[in-house]
Amino acid sequence: MNRVRSLTMIATLALSLSASTSAQEAALFRGEISDSQCALNVHSLTKSHEEMLKSKSGAAGHTPATCSIYCIERLGGRFVLVSGKNVYHLDNQNLPRKFVGEKVRLRGVLDPKTGTIHVVDMVAVEKANF
Image 1 (tube, rainbow, N blue to C red):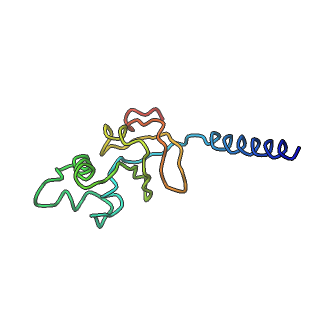
Image 2: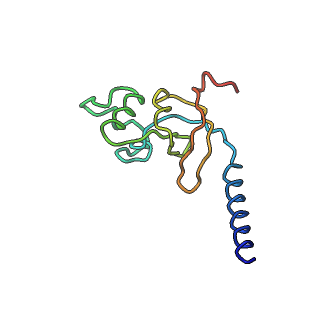
């Protein structure tokens, strides 16, 4: 009898946890797709591409997009969403590549513990229906 009661309690707890996890609805985020190196001041003093783009070598290119690609491919950065003063990590690193350096509207679920957004979809702001 106690075993049945214990199993019932465990099953109820498991179902309630899965229901609360799946109940998280996707939210809308707006910002610019950048790289973690520049956005988190790894090699930047201004949370921007400014220092990299002014370097004499020109290795990072001349636009925020080329700088982000350089920082990701050569310096170990990852795509992030910069929204105001917030920098969000993105779980999907393939989708942001075509939007790098652009302002986007992103739909996803934020994990507040890690600051990571589980990306559902993303569109450039110019294409977004507001």
